[in-house]
Length: 300
Image (cartoon, rainbow, N blue to C red; front, side, top):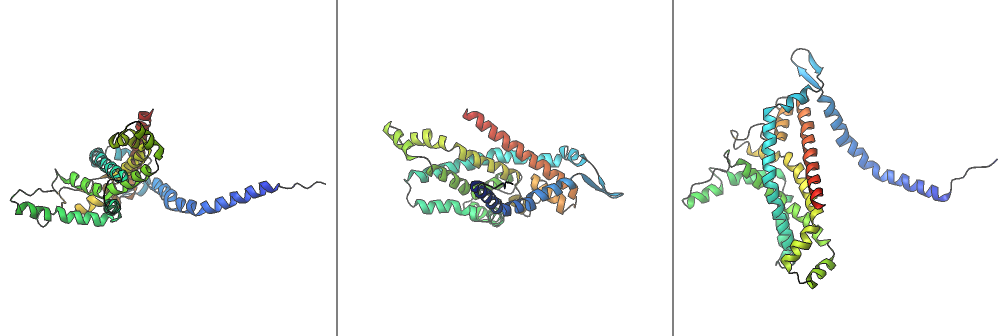
């Protein structure tokens, strides 16, 4: 009678596998508990509808069909799309210029400047929105007071014409430093041999930045762009706080995220809010994939 034995190498491999699963287990548990389970429950809720007569009943895709023709939701998506097309390029260009300037080594007090640009990202979004709300104040804000002191007409930064730009200014102030750090870290990872070869060929600082550094930054720029897509369509804190100062300009559907919050916690329409959330997630996935695909085709 022969006894089957497991080779020592296979035993060691099995132990390594078990150790790997143990290390990954906490993340998987939190991932399922905090993301997968809430998504599944929200998807379940989105298939029902509560009625005054009859209570909650299965509605299938009716909530999604209603959301696709909801003018308030569509207006919010278009408004956020305009915000994305204007604010994100400005923010990424500023982050790129700051990163290139810091990487050049020609700036004095570069560590202090780098920290100063990054500090706004460390400020909580709510605090940043409150601070800028004070600055934007049409009656008590310092911008208004300065304009009056100079004898100039004070701009109403909380008017319907300027509100989207005011929100974009807050977001740019908050996240330029974050994107700068991503690009700066990518610049520091570029092999110095490339710079030396370009210098030997007679390239100056501007030529090296344009022909060597910026092409090498494309993966980091793409990542920053994808993060910006997600952040733009999840815009909530800034309009929610500015709404208190300009309730006639920012309504409950100013952005899709604000609309979803209002549906769920003000109107108590949880089922429809869940359907809107899923559609908003689908829009983010489609836009992110489209941006990634467009950049990939451009690189070919």
